[in-house]
Image 1 (cartoon, helix red, strand yellow):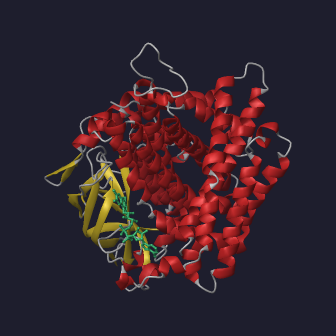
Image 2 (cartoon, rainbow, N blue to C red; image 1 turned 180 degrees about the horizontal axis):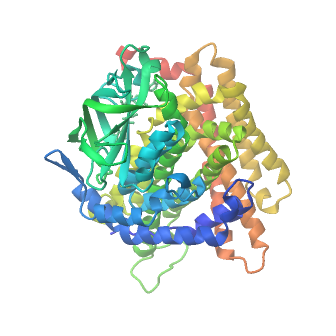
Length: 592
Ligand SMILES: Cc1cc2nc3c(=O)[nH]c(=O)nc-3n(C[C@H](O)[C@H](O)[C@H](O)COP(=O)(O)OP(=O)(O)OC[C@H]3O[C@@H](n4cnc5c(N)ncnc54)[C@H](O)[C@@H]3O)c2cc1C
């Protein structure tokens, strides 16, 4: 059976040595000192290890069931959800006014990694609620916030996001669900939504569905889409639960992974809904929380790679196969452990260097979100918006890749369910698809984000890398294997951007055919920058009395591996982009 230990030491290193969280000029960050974040992460680790992780396999094997219109979650989920709720874990960064604890989003993100790694399917129930909470918080009237938010913060009522329909997922302009205005200001919502995560379950008193629908007579296409609050059970003005609304579950989808999360077909039959935000501006309302939601999915990607890596490492230390060609390491045993073999080392280093780099990237991104929200910093907002498709796309692609790489360490046992490794890969796979498929993230990056504010934010990113290299030119740790690769990779990325500028206007396919490569190489540069920051912090910490030498030296060595073995991938991606769209688009559709 797999196990999980929250990597709190690594998290604390990122929060304090790298990001220096408690000294940042962001309101609320002064409380985030080492002791405080350490205590929160340790407690979250206990919940994850003792309560959530043991239910991971239970959720995977039992799945959710639909009985007489009611969805039942796997055994133990409800009790665990009560425990998470009572521990206040669902309310960490929520607004104090609605019962939250008002902590920074960064703290929520650290805890989120732990809970998601331990049990991704379970954590989605509160993750979706958090997304719905954020949308109501940003766009609701005062009365709506008072009515819905306190119970959502405590997760007594959970939330969902309903965008997808049978004939449309990416192209939501094709949506058919309709909203008919009523005399009392409410709407009657009718239509079918599919693939709705946490669409129904038995762990909360009520479910607050956020549903995209078209108000009759509104503009065609995406410009006519509005967002509605549609409760499963009606709520009166005093907050009392009343009759069932016209919302029902058509079926639960059978799927590849995250079996513990109920993915539902939802039918809305003249259900009562309340407009959230402005008429026909539903997509804008959804998009205001996209940075957070997509960062949360990127986090799911590397969190699954983290738990898979932990188990692969334990297996590699334990399993005896073959001998070290440079000299036996286990003379008393019949063979040496797998970890002696260079190819196993390569695999483990790939996983380790990705997961630790990804964690730094996501924590840094969460800090940008805090800076944007708490300081009203428009530059931070622009930068995180630019990087959001990379966090989502790159980290979930690689998260899946490394979850399967971890399976490989187990050989055939990785493919056998008994060992639990296939669940990590199966669960991680969905993160590449939902919240906007990764190909669409790449389109968003190249087709939209690069040009925002006249390219100001991408230029700011390049300046950030350049300044880092310049300011640290004399840093001895960084001189050895960090600065040159980072410079070269950043140059490749700029050359790719230049190619798009020179060719994209004449032929949009020149940019679109290279968009996935661009997203991937941008991801590598981001992780390269994060590793340089981590190496700098580790180098500085090594000079302190009582430094944890083994830990800090391992950080630097892992970073050096990423710079030498992963970052050069930017050269290949640049070559692909510069080869132009002809190779991609050369065949007629009928010739495939
Ligand atoms: C387990 C699960 C949970 C989900 N949870 C939710 C949820 O809670 N709420 C919700 O609303 N939805 C949810 N979804 C739906 C999910 O967000 C969609 O499946 C996803 O957005 C893709 O939409 P689609 O499946 O219709 O694919 P399509 O839109 O048909 O796309 C198919 C493929 O074509 C590509 N593509 C599409 N358009 C373009 C283009 N213009 N250029 C290039 N490539 C393109 C896509 O990248 C994709 O690879 C969930 C799905 C699953 C499987």
